[in-house]
Picture: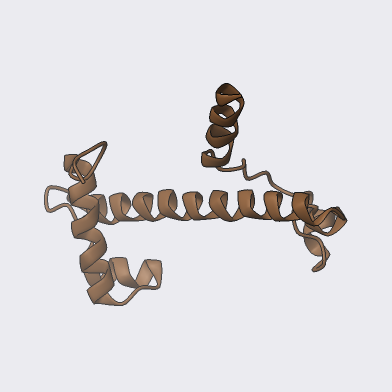
Length: 118
């Protein structure tokens, strides 16, 4: 029984895969990852929770990639370096936020905060 509980916990911790919906289904505002077709509330809660976790994980990963790109674009060693104002304009950020993202990206590129450094 402990084995079953452990595998259930591992399944819950792993975000659901984000799959692209067909264009026809995505065009329907009532359609969202087929959640509207789930009638059992337990199953609906489980699947919608999986999607929530997956979207959060995807957001976190995308944010890290934004920061890395911002840091690379602001790198003074680049001949085509961008200013934080230019980066902010491209990403639709404020300049202050762009500065923070550049610093965060530099930290990520140095490996600060990864795997146990938190």
